[in-house]
Length: 213
Image (cartoon, rainbow, N blue to C red; front, side):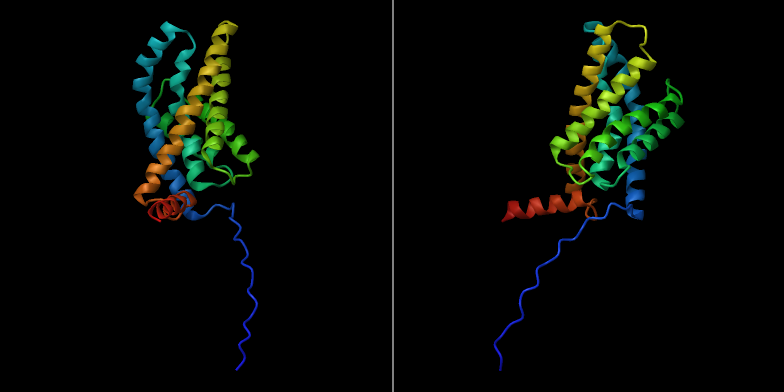
């Protein structure tokens, strides 16, 4: 009897598809709609807080605008497909507009611009890197988009100092609230097991396995 064994066949790494699945569309839509409701609710908290911040240092009210940037990074981390951040921001902005908002349908324009800000950063990493530094950078880019858009549309006549403070505050808010905040939110969702069919859920399971080992 021969004791010779067949040579080992090297395993071929599985390439992750960037094509949207039905489950991607469904989950992205559900998350975006839920965050759109949060957008609407945040309007009630933003007004008094931003008014106080503006009295202390005009322009710093943008420090609290990062809540309106959450949809893009959250859905992008979960779905990890081209267009996820833009799609989520547009859906969330549409929900906010349908629920009624003081900014009217310009909310959709804001969603478009802010979603593109995050989308560009994720595209630079070929939609394959979703570690915390990249997500923070995507949030900061969305914040930059928010700051520039707002100063152009809503504060065109104010001085340069105000605009600089506003844009810098928006970038910080985007990095912290939309960047770090979305990353922590997705980790919390993954811990519940609802993201088991997504890379974010599998990554959480592997971290848990290593911790046990």
